Length: 420
Image 1 (spheres, rainbow, N blue to C red):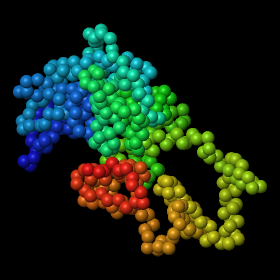
Image 2: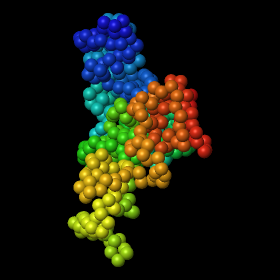
Image 3: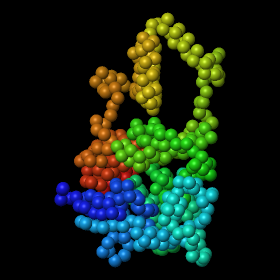
Image 4: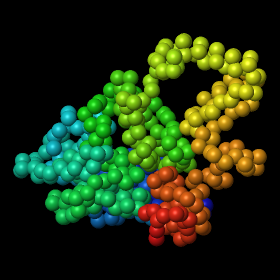
């Protein structure tokens, strides 16, 4: 056994842990459930919700699992009377000021507070005093606030400071007078701001565009991939009544971790734009007219046939969208080669093709996206990576925080989030 590995006992189970690990990390790896609100594996430990209190033998009081490092031969009880009593008491304190508005809350049905209250809370409360009320703030077109529901976990604050590198939200006041907000009135509209919606364990921060449009249990979840910036962020699309209602991140440590950009999160609204083409059109007497699919496909087949008969198969070419899927591109080239043409391209915006014999057909970084966070130096040429590819920007920010030198060559100065 390595010197860095120690043995602990949790609920009678022998577990191995690395020195310096927090207890909650070890139990998560072992599949042992400990309730939590402020803890998130991608954020620093705050230990301010106290929901993860557990019993550690020889400790004088219940200890927070998220802030308790493992020690050799530690014996832990997560379901003892002491632990359950501490968790139930904490749950009651957290619900003191929380409004009973689950039926109208967008978080209802997928709320961590609901789940934990059902599993670890008391069946009744002794609190009879007046609940506090917090005035809501308009922080922009993307995030809706119901701050009376806030339980002060500070996940949203830590995300901006530690992950995005743009501290848009902060906390003022102490105790029950703490308020989450922007301090100076402004909108929250950075390229990653929507991730605080996923991080919020209650309904204090919800998506404004989809507010009150559907209940979570009415939606069907479909795995997808973002087409916007070549990063390929993994998504879940939530569909109800045959329309996309929400887009949320699908965890993939090699690509987008647990985050997505606001472009990926909210662009589904463009699917229902009034100026979007949703049916095939054929030009008749110089004007485009809507037709059914059979008519459109017949017209396309006749045009291709006419072009081949007149000038040969090499006279026709196909341009595939760079945002199309691999399967769509594969079928396109199969169609063209079946017609006898090898003229297939996806470079819709390229102007100069003088070096195309030497240039790669599909340019790429030459390394995985994940490896960007371990580079020693990086040079960005003509790139505003924070806005153009926010998830790649997060990887470079990690590298910069570790000491990497990130340099830029640009015709103008862009605001970056990777400065040390």
